[in-house]
Length: 341
Image 1: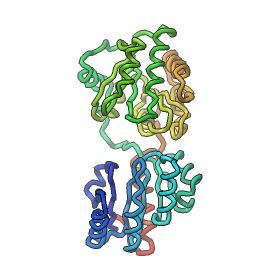
Image 2: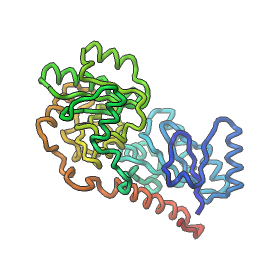
Image 3: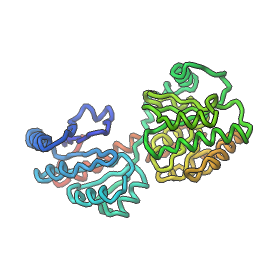
Image 4: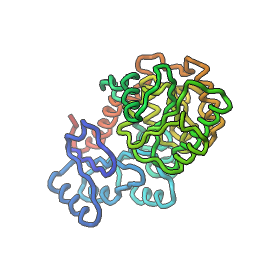
């Protein structure tokens, strides 16, 4: 079966990049271009990959008009707003099947009737267990971070780190407050807080660090490429988010045995048995501080699964993601008697 992958901001994995892809543009001319691709290539299935507030309903409609079945995957958390819900409901019947990547999204899919229960599936964005993870080793990861930072620390320094997303819900202000509280009131020593950011941090972040006088223990690295590849440099990973968004980072931490602290938001709740301290109420520097001190005092994390070679279950693997996705493809192809190989 020939599958055409439709993308905009989503980045396809390497195994899909070699297949047919269509990157959407803007304006009516792009709809015409898409129609020409459909008519020329004649795919049996269109797989639409949505990110953020993207819906691609018109592309799904054009495919269906040309008797092409449509599957879509929502790769980021549903941004539930009135306008977004209206767009989703308007396009609901253009999609043959909807894939979501967390229980949080599945709940909202059902709550807002964005897809019927027989036409939606939860498939996690899995970790590739076959991937060489040598680059994640602690010493090599720290060496790279120190090079970016321009300074280095002794080998026995404890690093509590986070990867900061450039959105309003990253909760980084609460982590900075927690660093201050731990330093001033908990007598925390031999510890630094590391914030890795793929882009630029706001002036508010810099100002907050300066106002609290935690420049020596709260360090920021901007324009840091692929920060998730160096997550094993951290002794503890912390997700201070006020809304969901760190699911894949928490999954990676679980896989590479980095103890993690997370707030009790959205899809992070799925890691309730994996975290090194009980999930923390969001927007609370006090509870973040208590969680940090709990993890430090308890050398062995409370997670029941970190001692396993691969602590994540099969449902969190790339292999399972591939198998279940292709099962859906084949289900869509049954009436045509075509099977994907």
